[in-house]
Picture (cartoon, rainbow over the protein chains, first blue to last red):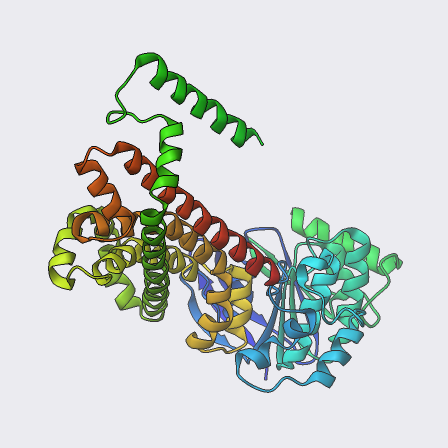
Length: 224
Length: 242
């Protein structure tokens, strides 16, 4: 199925249609306050605090935000297995260890979030998102609080680990969209517009000429 | 260290004031005579302190348990929250002192009315603090929990309640400070035993030094209780990653 939002929020955005391609990573790029997160929250089935008029077709989703949203009283492993814990299902220790290793945190399973760096916390959130194994993955500016090097590194890791899944990634960073988006959509007060993604599979090199060109074009589109 | 110094200066000025003005001991006893009273009346004060301490602990435990139960019930049922929330506020405006005689009338002269006073005093701050915490879970975690398809009970148990523990701890600390006062008021009004009763009798017999000695024991008891609760709460919270 194609998760989609079709409708408008008076005062925020006019009539628009956001459709996600199955198995692809769609980057939704836009300035702060244009309603990117509102669209994502509509797909997540979360309260938006605004009046949406329209239709949402979505699937069970896994969410990762700018704030990792880890539980400070749970260990890394317990945070990764949070979904099972909440639903009263037995934790799958093997899967959890594999995911913690996949995000490069092997050996830190018993740490508490307070003992981790910001980048490590986002990695735990990524592992938790993967552990949910939902048909739709929603990323709400997941790396925007990280420094440039970490943003590149963890963004690449996320794109690789999420390959083949239906993903919506909201970002305000044109470089991130150019590197990580199979598809790129730009949301401005004028509406939602598609933008051709640079060639090649994601994650793309941050300094590839086509990526840099796309980044410049996207920035122009945001400034227009 | 600075606190000890302040205390020493205060005691010295008090002693000097009494000696210089020649105030009679039934108006203001000197610190030395209070200390002497503490020692001579130890056979009376010690069991009284034990009783008051016991009433305080039982009342604190009961009041905290009731407060937690009320807050959780209010968080689970929005209708109950809307109904009971204002009642909590109104109940705080009632001077509990005024209730002591009627509690004695209802519950007799034993331990029950004193414990009930403590419960009344402890219940509201605990319930209010925990309820506020339960209603304000951290937003990022709440979003994650909701997309994971947790029911409202799992949401409460795994997120709202643990996240509200620091608020609950604040409520308990407040409760621990006020709790001994509740027990003393109860003993004042309707009791033959306990520190409150010792104070009332000492006042009636113009034994102001004994009154002050009992007051000193109340303060020491309250401070000990508060420190013990504060330390164990801090340790518990730290162990949970706060």
